Image (tube, rainbow, N blue to C red; front, side, top):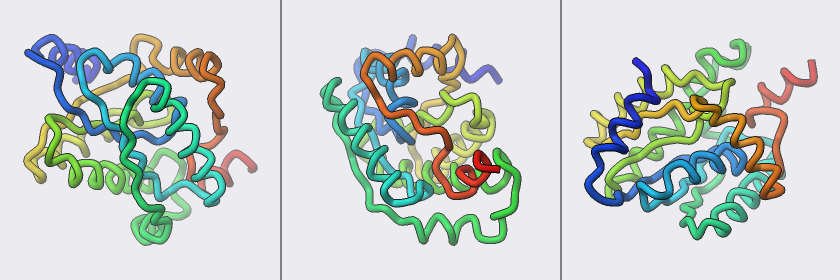
Length: 194
């Protein structure tokens, strides 16, 4: 399935501006996604990232996300930091390779939270598909499954298409956003130091 084409079909068929609860991992990734979707949706960014550590890194990314959202007058729904839940979720998968089953469990953890909070929204989705390091197929499979489970509409996406990732880098420079060099969890951080 071409998820970008599916997204464009959804956008083309919208009859009015819809409410979207959009999970975001960080300001740089959300920069392009917000600019791409803001004419179609009344966006609320959900900042739920219990995987990010250390806590100082989590706070730094959250501060940048809020800064960017303020520039666009986008609402932010900030969740509690629950790093213990992340570690319980990936227990036994600590040594998995980056981009594998541990990451899939993390995707599901964050998308499940988004779906569970999306009852007053027309759609829920995530900015994670903008990254070339994230598995868009798996993210969309999880999102579609959770949409059925929670009786919500999931916004299918592959935001890295049409140079979305490249545009996020340019927007990050334009807005002077902090760009991290690892996904967020301690395992991805350890990988870059190897």
